[in-house]
Amino acid sequence: MKHIARKRFGQHFLTDPSVIEAIVRCIDPRAGQSMVEIGPGLAALTQPLVERVGHLSVIELDRDLAQHLRQHPQLNVIEADVLNVDFAQLTGSHADTRWRVVGNLPYNISTPILFHLLDHAEHVIDQHFMLQKEVVERMVALPSTAAYGRLSVMLQWRYDMDLLMHIGPEAFEPPPKVDSAIVRMVPKTQPLPLAFDVLSELVQVAFSQRRKLLRHTLGVWLQQKGLDSDFDLQRRAEEVPARPSALIVHFDPPAVVIGVVAAVGQDVPKLAIMRLRFDVTHRLGVALRGQHVVQGLCKQVLHGVSFQRKPRPRAIIPRKISRVPPRNEKLGATAVT
Image (cartoon, rainbow, N blue to C red; front, side):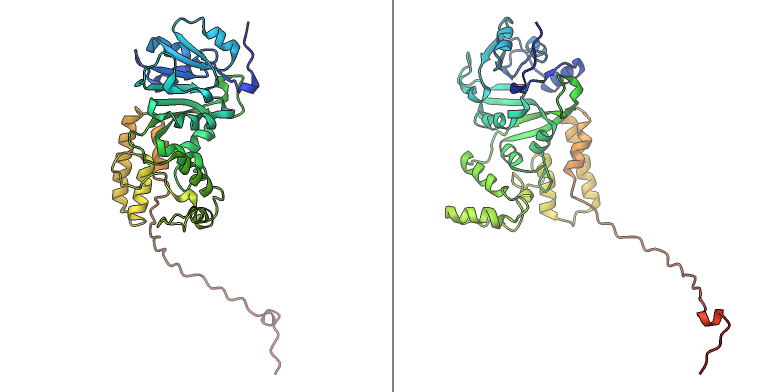
């Protein structure tokens, strides 16, 4: 019996074989790895993954789909809401087990799932998710862009992220009304030691009125908390990077732009930027194996660093002056004194 997609679960099942193969290549599963899939659905992605890793844990909320998945001998089916799953206590896992997490997340609750996984980042090797394209663009957004916001700051504090590929609605059944994208999220080995609750509140206050200067929002919040800081409040929240602006100490596309702009401002020699562009392109090409994402990321990385070329002096062309005779001359009249 064919399963009917349930709208309340936000179900859109991936059916395009070429897209499935491309996603599996992005994930690059290896035999023996501990992997968990969120929302396996009809097992379109599950089957090629379990063939490569040997055994797979899946988290499925839909009772009918979970019952169907239990017939697969290589699957450990967890019938639960992923928001209630403790990844440190997954069935059959050891205390030191770190997971590779994949999934086609329900678009209607994707943000709560991402924030839930923040609490378990130390138990995760990497995450590959299919999400609404606009959500992924917000996740990887650079400062001073329209997409940069609370989600960008909170996730960039804890993860290094890359947008890997775009997927159209025609790859799903039923087709969603939005475009989708694949994002890779790798937890930072040494994130800034911050209290999550305090950071979350601070960022929420900062972006509550994103068009206003921070002294009107964050400045008031700091005073209420009795905190004294030399942080520059004479800028908008969307202009503040989510990480220190080091000048390419380690390869990180957002840090490249922030570092260049913050360190040398508008006095960047054109040749230096060209060398930087080549270096970024080369490293991204190696990291992403030459995918078309490279060019797009490089454009984003260098967005905002413009070269002010002096305008060329135009040749001065003398204008042809034409004298229009007065009206009385045209009529042959003479002036009367």
